Image (cartoon, rainbow, N blue to C red; front, side, top):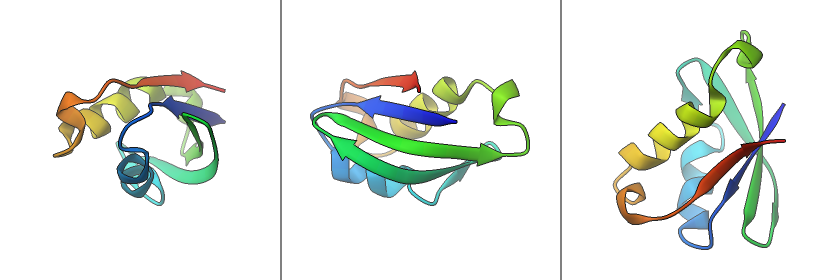
Length: 76
């Protein structure tokens, strides 16, 4: 399963935060960047049963840089 984070701002910081990181038992690996889209692969015990979008949004919003940026997260 993949997720896409769309944002024109702080892409490097979001990539650094998620790539190789594990949040709520879900691990993320950077796949590619296309324009404003950052694609990450998702792995874990059963990522299909979790709300991956909420996990990503919480991780970004809780970071020191994520409070003031606009972004969206989609399953792909």
